[in-house]
Length: 129
Image 1 (cartoon, rainbow, N blue to C red):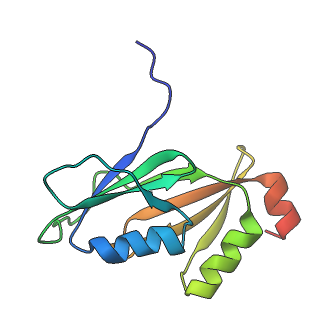
Image 2 (spheres, rainbow, N blue to C red):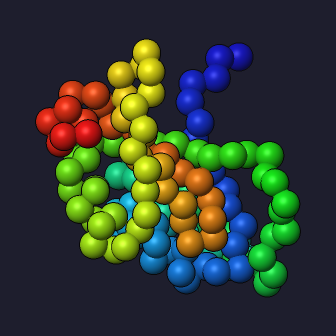
């Protein structure tokens, strides 16, 4: 067997509508087709790929310290993304990764999940980061 890449992340939330809006409005993902599961949820798409699966739960999952610290996606369009973050009031931290030639934009969704969006160093240089 050969693993290729991570297909999606599945997030349980008691804040389904706000999470869908955050992923749509802040990350620019689109809500799309989802199998007819017998529980509430939404699939958020990056292009034609359902990368974030949200599962609606009645109570917020309790976690003192999560086992998964973050998930990451690569992207282009850094300047537009930073403009969207600023317009939405979303705090972020930009970090150059030593030796890998990428810039990470670290954000937290409205449930507090850590996500970083990776951009090339060339794009970061052009945008002044």
